[in-house]
Amino acid sequence: MTAQIVTRFAPSPTGFLHIGGARTALFNWLYARGRGGKFLLRIEDTDRERSTEPAVAAILDGLQWLGLTWDDLPVYQFARARRHQEIAQSLLASGHAYRCYCTPTELDAMREAARAQGRPPVYDGTWRDRDSKLAPPGVKPSIRFKSPRTGETVIDDQVQGRVIFKNESLDDLIILRSDGNPTYNLSVVVDDHDMGITHIIRGDDHLTNAARQSQIYAAMGWTRPVFAHVPLIHGPDGAKLSKRHGALGVDAYRDMGYLPVALRNYLIRLGWSHGDDEFISAEQMLKWFDLPAIGRSPARFDFLKLANVNGYYMRVAPDTDLIAALREMLPNSADHADLASRMTDADWTRLLGAMPGLKERAKTLVELMASAGYLFAVRPLAMEPEAQKLLGPDGKAALQGALNVLEVATVWQAPALEAAMKTHAEAAGLKLGKLAQPLRAALTGRATSPGIFDVLVSLGRDEALARIRDQAV
RNA sequence: GCUCCCUUCGUCUAUCGGUUAGGACGCGAGAUUUUCAUUCUUGAAAGACGGGUUCGACUCCCGUAGGGAGCGCCA
Image 1 (cartoon, rainbow, N blue to C red):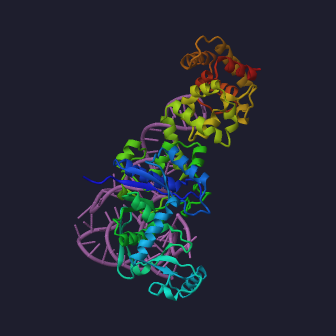
Image 2 (image 1 turned 180 degrees about the horizontal axis):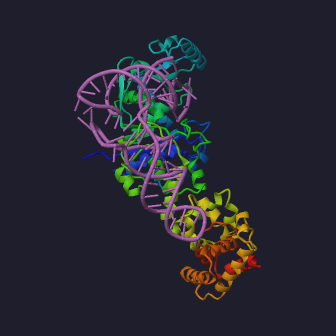
Image 3 (image 1 turned 90 degrees about the horizontal axis):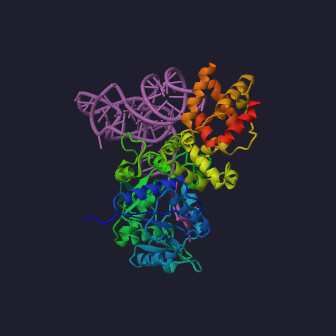
C-alpha cells in the first residue's frame, strides 16, 4: 500500500489571500483531494510584527469562498516555537549547528564587503569552527546550521526537474535568533515533518530554500517530502504581479463579481493544461491535475480571459445560484451596495425572473447588476441619450401603437406578447425593430437590454404599461 | 555580482525528433437577430538569436540575448 498523501498551504498572515497564494492553495488542494489525501493549513505567524488576526480571517475566508476546504484545525506556527527550539538544540548537540557571535552590524559589514569585491554576500563561517570560549562578552549568540561545505544538494522537483545546488554556494543559515526565536527555514522543516507532509507545493521563490531545508532534513535523519515549486504569476507586463495588476485579495475578485468556480478554472489553466481543454469541471480537475504537467515558465495574469471564463460560468449557472452569489457579494460591491440594501423580496424575485436574459449579457455579477438597473428604476425613467434618440415623433407614434396592442393583451407572457406585436407590426407595415427599439427605450431608459418581450414580462403588466404611457405622450 | 529557473501567435497553452505547428482569450470579417449580447462560420497571428547532434529539429546539446526568482537574526 502507498502512504496517504498530505499537502499543506502555509500562508503568512500579513495581508489578504492574494491570487498567487490562491493558486498555490488550489494546486495543493487538488493534489491531495484528487488522490484521497489530506490538505492541511498552517498559519506562519512567527513574524509577530506583521502578522494580524484580521489577515488570518481574510485568508480562511478566501479559501472557503474558493471552496478549498482543509482538513483538521489550522496549525499556528508561532505556538510551536518551543518544539522548534528543541530541534535547534538537538542540532547543536549533534554537531550540525553552532553558536555564532557575530552581531547584525558585523554581518551587514561582511555582506557589504563581499558585494564590493564581487563575491556572493553570504556568511563567511567566522564562528563555524571557532571555540565558543573566544566569544566576546555580552553578545548573545544566534545558532547557525552547519551546512556541508562540499558536495551537492539535489532537489528532484516535480515541476522544475532535477535542480542541483553546489553546497559551497549555500551558507550557514541562522536557525535560532539570538533572542531564542526560531527562523523560517527551521520552523518549516520541523512543522512539515511533524505534520506528516508528503508533498510540498509552493511558489518557486522557495526553490533555494528547498535546498537548505533539504540539508536540515538530512541532518535530522528525517525523510524529505516531495517538492514541487510552481512559477509565480506575473502581471500583464511580465513583471512581478503587483497591486495595480491583479495581486488583489480573492475578496476583491469576489467583489468585482467573479464566481469562485470561474476563478478556479482560470487559475488552474494558468501554467497548467490538459490538452486543449479550457472549461474544466471540479471532477475533471481532481482527476486530471498532476504536478509534472505544470509549466516551468511564469504565466501572465489576463483579466480579459478571466472575464471570458466568468461569462461562461455565469451563462451555465442555475439562476438561483446566481441570485445566491449576488446576495452574498452585492453588499460589498462599490457600485451596488446601496441598491442591495434597499432591495425587497419582491425585487429579488423580479431579478430572478429576468435572470435568463441578464446572465448571457454579462461577464461579471457587477455587470449583470448594472444591466438589471431597469428592473428597479423609478418612474418616470431617466433616459440615456441613446434612448432619447429613439423617442422622436416616429418613436412615440410606434409606442402608441404598441400600447394599444399591449393594453388588450390577455396573456402577459413572452411568446404571446411577441405574437401579438408581430401581428401588429405587419399590419402597420413596420419592421419589428421600429417597434422594439422605442419600447426598449421607454421600458428601460436605455438603447440596449435583454429581449424586449422578456423585459415586458419581468417588469410586470402594470409597471410596463405605465412606463410606456410615460413616454408615449 | 553570484546561484538557480525560464523563452511556441499580443496573452494562456498543445506538441513529448517527422504535423499544412493545434486549441482558447483578444482582434478582423460574415451569418443569425427587436437592441446589446449569446451562438455559428471564418481570417490574420508564433517556435528569441547563433551554432551544433541527426536522414530529419519547436522538440536534444552549447553559446548569446532577454525575462524571472533567490542571495536577512522576513516569511
